[in-house]
Length: 187
Image (spheres, rainbow, N blue to C red):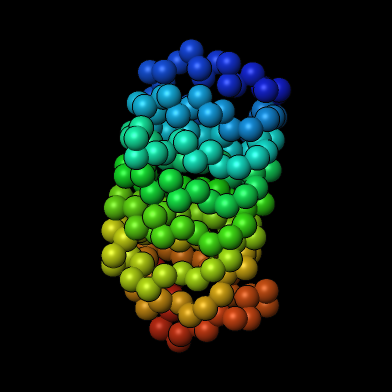
């Protein structure tokens, strides 16, 4: 099992890195900002560690486009808001920020990522609404899992186009109006 704050030093020397898989360890500290220098990085999986701080906005920026396709930071101690800069990672296909302490709304820049297939952010403290036109204006979204958050409002009809969704129709979500046509779609 890996532990400690060594990752920043290691990553800064690997600028041609394409895949970084180090889930289920005890790596601490913040998510290394030096990952922003890895412009060829396609998969970043730091799930189930002990990272804290914000989701780094510099992972994706319009001035430094990346090849990032999968951003998997679930089950850490991340806090703050989901950075709108993630919308600059036009190649992102999967985002999993579940089981953290994230707050605020999911930025529109994330909802409209053109290649996003999976958006998984359950068990946070996210607020706001699911925008109208999701799965229409936003591209190819197939999976949306947002249960155990503080999201309110009506569920857009376009969500019916998803292959899989879980919005957490539970007693914690009384502000949601569930339309009788919503159902779980399987592929």
